[in-house]
Image (cartoon, rainbow, N blue to C red; front, top):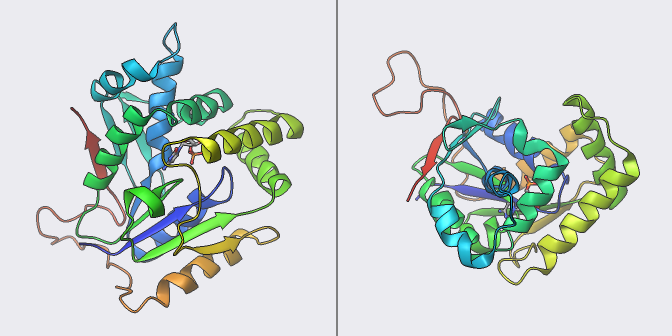
Length: 250
Ligand code: DC
């Protein structure tokens, strides 16, 4: 089994930027599990009626999700449609957190996420990676930061995407979503008992990545960077450093 690093934590704690930076630096595979919940959330949002628990199993089974884990530009294809940008809106965030509370949805997505573990080292991020998806991960990190810091980071991200929002509205959206993610019965957001908790309040991105890398490098089985495949790479090797294709289908 490959070396796995899990990064869990509340919304906008810097999990994605840290995980992607690590995957890029080490040439490892990158897995954004939140993107899977966002994709199903978006699909549920597009229905006229809310998704019930009873319908959730068939709903998830009938869905196809392709995740390409290139840390420089991960893409998500839902039922053949590229929804990489559409899953990043505040409405899709809220919908993701709602479908994520449905046990049948979690069962299906966890199965697909586990199947993406390959021979290459992997850095994955989400809410339950250290506790449920990869409980045997070599390194488990839990990233946290105070609510105002996280709201400020999310506001900047949304502005970069061209979405204008108010600080208070973003802060509220994150607070409500975290409460829902922490209080659900199935796989609630929490740090694994063997996770290293990093409080990134007041840290810039570079320090955050260095702090995470220091924990990863200190593991006795740290495999080091994976060299980028050259032009004579054997068939079946990864085409781009950290690149990954995962597919979930019934
Ligand atoms: O990491 P994110 O903000 O993209 O995640 C969106 C939502 O998906 C989050 O509010 C809760 C859910 N989620 C989850 O329940 N488990 C995961 N492993 C990842 C995300």
